[in-house]
Length: 601
Image (tube, rainbow, N blue to C red):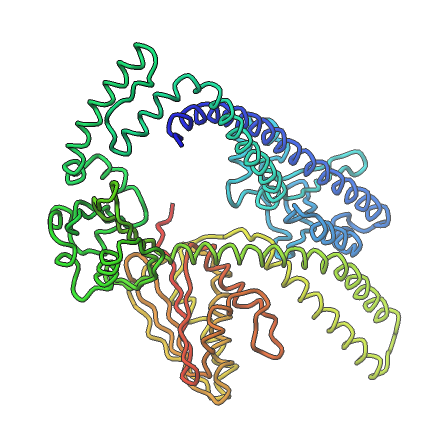
C-alpha cells in the first residue's frame, strides 16, 4: 500500500469539506442562539403578563389601603412570583419595584426595600452579532432583565422585572451546540471516505511512480524500467539519488538536535529522546522537573547517569532494551518538582528496517486524567440532581404553599383554639416549613449562585464560625484549637458561601467525635495559596469511602442527605480552590482547603 500521496489528496478534499461543514455549523449556531434568546424572552414576557394581571387584581382588592402595602400583603401574588422562578428554567429572580427602583416584592426577601439596580435588557442580546452574542451568553455570572411597566389610574406606578441568568439560558444552547458538533463529526468521516475514493481515480496515472517511492522507503534504490514517460523517469532518477543521500545521513540526523525541540516543548506530557546507546538527545520542558537537570547539562549523557539512582525508569528501560518490544502504559510513581505523582509511561524503540535508531520515552501525568474523569462524573451527578429538583419543585412547592396558607387561615378563623388544636397547628406548620426548606436546599444547590466577592479575612471568618459552634458542642466534650497565621493575606471571596463551607466541615468534624475530642484549625500561606486545615480526632473515614464523600447523595449518616460535602466541594470550586481529605479509621480526619490569593480589581 502507498497511503502517503493518497492521503495528501484526501487531506485537501477533507479540508474543503471541513470548511463547508464548519461554515454551515456556524450559521446554524448563530440562528440557534437567536432562537433560544427569543424563546426565553417570550417565556419571560408571558410570566410578566401573568404577574401584571395578578397585580391588577391585588390593587383592585386594596380598597382604601396604600397600593404598596396591598401588594406586600398579597400572598397569592408573592406565591406567583416564587412559583414563576421555581418553574422557569431560566429565571433567577422576580420582583415588583416602585418608581424609585426599590423592590416592594422580591423572590429574595432580604432584598426587599433596597434599591435594585437595573440589569441589561435581555432583548439587547438580539441586536448583537452572532460572535458577541455567544460571548455574552458564555460570559459567567451575567444576568439580563425583562421589564414590564405598571400603571395605577393611568399613571406610572412601578415595574415588574424578571432576571434571566445566562448560565441557565446557555444550557439549552449547549444542547444544540452538541447536536451541531455531532452532525459535523458525522459529516467529516463521510467526506474523508469520499476523498479517498476521488484520490483512487486522480492518482492512477502516477501509481507506478508511487510504487518506486515505496521501494525506496524499504531501501531498494534501483528504479525499475516500468516507469513510463520521460518526466517520470527523470523524477525517479532524482528520487533515487535523494534516497541514497538520505540513507547515508539517516543515523547522523537522529543524533542532532532538530527544530522538533520547539514543538515538543509545547507538549504537556514529558518526552525524552535517547540514541541507540540510551544517551540523552533531548527532552522537553515537562521532563526537566522529572530529570532534575537542564537539557544543556544532560545532552549526550546516559539516562541512567542523569536520573537519580535508584530510579523506577531504569528497570523498565532495561526490560524494553532486552526484549526489543515497546513497553506501553506502565504506571509508576515519580517525583516531579519534589512532589510524588503518578505517571503512565510508554517506552517505544524507533526502528529503521531491522535496526534500532533510538528510543522515545513518553510520560503522561495521570493527575490531569483523574481530574477530567472526576469532573465528568460530577457533571453527570449535577445533571441528575437538576432533573430531580425540577420534579420536586413542580410537585411539592405549590402544594406546600397552599397548605401553609390554609394553616394560617385556620389560625385566623379559630378565635380561641384549645391547647391540643394549637399544638396540632404548630406541628403541621413546622413540618410544612421543614419540607419547604428541603425543597429550597435542592434549588440552592442546583441554581448557579452569583458570587458576591469582597476582601475577606479568613481568620476572622473562622473565628466567628468557631464561636457559633462552641456554644453547641462544648457541653458534649468537643473543644476547638485555633492555630491561625497572624499575617494571613486577605482573599477575594463570597463571605456567606465560605461561611457555609467552614460551618459544614466543622459540623462534620464535631459529629465524628461522639465521645468528645479536639478540632484543630490551622491557616497558612503557601505559594500564593491560602491553606485552611481542619483536623478532628473522630472515628475517621473508611479507605473505600474517601473518594465518595464529595459525591451527591453519598452519606454514612442515618439521617444524612448526602448534599452537604458536595455543596462544600462546589463552593470551593466556584472560588477556584481545591479541597482534599486524609483520614485514618479510629484516629481522625483532616480536611485541607486551598484558596488562591487574589488581588482586588
